Structure formats: structure tokens, C-alpha cells
Length: 327
Ligand code: NDP
Ligand code: GDR
Image (tube, rainbow, N blue to C red; front, side, top):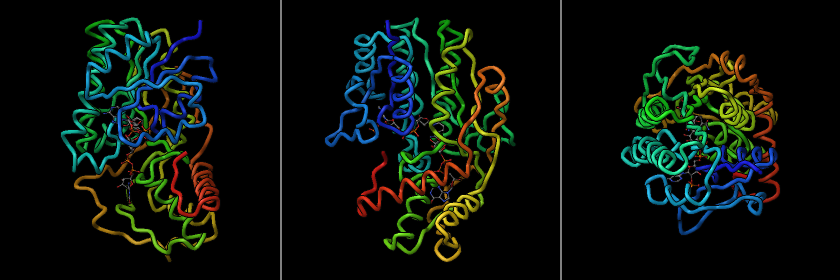
């Protein structure tokens, strides 16, 4: 019998790659989608007929209980969240509800309906915030945004439910991962999209915030493999997942503009309005536990990732100059 996976956040970047990955492994895939007046299944359009969409929201426990009863999942991937860090200052309560308490609602549904199901929580390197890198599973958390604080709650409630109820529940602490399907507001995609527009004569400037922030950027397609590997282990354990290589925003911009033969200095300016009330300056993973226990290695490096994203945006814009699609 095919294994049954329930994925929250299936319409997001990671949800779309994970759904493809699980389908290729022969899973029956169920995706939770929240109700809206204009449902966008853009990122999963190409696999829509192979997955079952269920209506539900992390803010609503009843809808989660119903989804669990319907699916009777073997594995649950909780990817849904308010995931954009700046919005967590303008909508802090919503962020706490979805990104923090939402995790507990999913765990409550799992505990009551499918206590034998294996559970993956999408935790984040934002939880480390100000903690000195390289950050590993033993680095203490020091979050710097309402988003980061909510993720710390999601992490610890996952650990707590594992220890309280004996659930197979794991927290994957993933560093930034990107792709041509990344939302337009995140810095990598904002840059790749702007570079493509400038190259095609559709724009002539790019305003950014903190150019000095350093991150460990990888490819989302590699990271969903790590999520799945965590649920195939004998013991439920938490893992840090990242490349171990760090770049700053300036490097990213230089690389992306350089790829199309442009000098970034002619187009990029810093706009103080895009600075965050408190930023995370310095993240880089120590992924040695994931490497040794899961056998996980990233296959796409930073340079290949940014080239892939710029090329994808060029292709999309050449096909449809006003389009901004994420798929
Ligand atoms: P996206 O923002 O692309 O996707 C978020 C998903 O969550 C969307 O499907 C969205 O639905 C859904 N969602 C939001 N609120 C709710 C809600 N109340 N109820 C149900 N669904 C909801 O994020 P990513 O794919 O990039 O990230 C996946 C997860 O991993 C997130 O939890 C994120 O915080 C975390 N993470 C991401 C990292 C990264 O670098 N990408 C790194 C570390 C952690 P809709 O389409 O309706 O908006
Ligand atoms: P992050 O990603 O906050 O790390 O969260 P983002 O791409 O938004 O920012 C990365 C860094 O770039 C700096 N930056 C800018 N960021 C944006 N968005 N727009 C700009 O114009 C800009 N200029 C500079 C930021 O200040 C920041 O330091 C992502 C999300 O996917 C989270 O959900 C996830 O948990 C973490 O990665 C790991």
C-alpha cells in the first residue's frame, strides 16, 4: 500500500517541491489549502491532478481534525506558516497564531487522530538570530523577530510533544533555501527578478535594505529531501540543514547582475525604509549531523542557484513581460 502524506503549506515554495518528491517516491499526497476568494495553486498546477487538496487552516483546529480523519496519514509535513520576516512586525499576532500556535494545533490533531503518524516541523535558522555561528543543533536560540520567536515556540512544542506523548515528531532547523519558485518579496528572488527585468529593459533600478546581512543560501529542491530523510530514521531527532557556506547580500547582487553582464553598482541603491527593526546579521550552518546521520548533502551550490533563478526569471519575462509567476 502506498504511504499517505499530509502536507500543510503545499501551495508554498517548499510544499511544491516536497509534493513532487513524495509523488516520485510513490506516496499518496494530500495537501492542506486555506480558503481564499482567489485560490492560487500556481506552484502545484503541474501536479494538481496527482494530489488531493483538502480545505483547512492552521488557525482552525476543527479543520485540522477533519483533515487528519479523512487522510489517516503515515507522515505529516507541517510547512504552513506566515513565513515572511518583515510581515511578522506588521502582523505579529497573526504570525504568532499561524507560525507558533498553529504547530500545536497540528500536533493536537495528530495526537488525537493519528498518534502513530510521523511528524515534521519546518523550523528555521531565524531561531538562532543573534547566536554566533556556525550554528548547530546545540547552539542556543536568540530570535530577532516575532517570526523567529514564533518558530522557537513551534520548535519546542514539537520537542515537548515528542517527550510528553512519545510521538515520532522532529524539527528540521533549515537555513535559507531558495528556487525559481521563491516568493517575490524574499531577497534572492527580488534580486533575480529585478536583474531579469533590468536586462530586458523593463526596469532600471533595484532598492534593497541591509546589504551586509550574511546568510547560508541553498536550493529548496535539496532541502525537501532532508525533510523526508528525517522521517525515515529509526529515532526521531532534530537536525540543522544548510550548506555550511556563507555569503552576504552584496555577493548575491554582484553574482546575479554579473551573470547577465551588468555592473550592480549602476542599478542598486540602499533604501533605509527596507531595513528591519532588528535584523539577523550572521547565519551559517554546521550541517555535520545531517551529513553523518542522514547522509544528506546539497547538490546545488550558491552560484548555480542564483544562475538558475536569474535564467528562470529571464525565461518567464521573455514569455510574458508583465508576468511575475512563481512556478
Ligand atoms: P511560503 O511562504 O512559500 O509558503 C507558506 C505556506 O503556508 C503557503 O502554502 C501558505 O498558503 C501556507 N499558509 C500560511 N498561513 C496559513 C494558514 N493559516 N493555514 C494554512 N496554510 C497557511 O514558505 P516556504 O515554502 O518558503 O517555507 C515553508 C516552511 O518552512 C514555512 O513554515 C517557513 O517558515 C519554513 N522555513 C522556510 C525556509 C526557507 O528558506 N524557505 C527556511 C526555514 C524555515 P497560501 O498559499 O494560502 O499563502
Ligand atoms: P530571511 O529571508 O529574512 O532570512 O527569512 P529574506 O530573503 O527576506 O532576507 C534575507 C536577508 O536579506 C536582507 N535584505 C532584504 N530582504 C528582503 N526580503 N528584501 C530586501 O529588499 C532586502 N535587502 C536586504 C534582509 O534584511 C535579511 O537579512 C527567510 C524566510 O524564508 C523565513 O521564513 C525562513 O525561516 C528564513 O529565511 C530561514
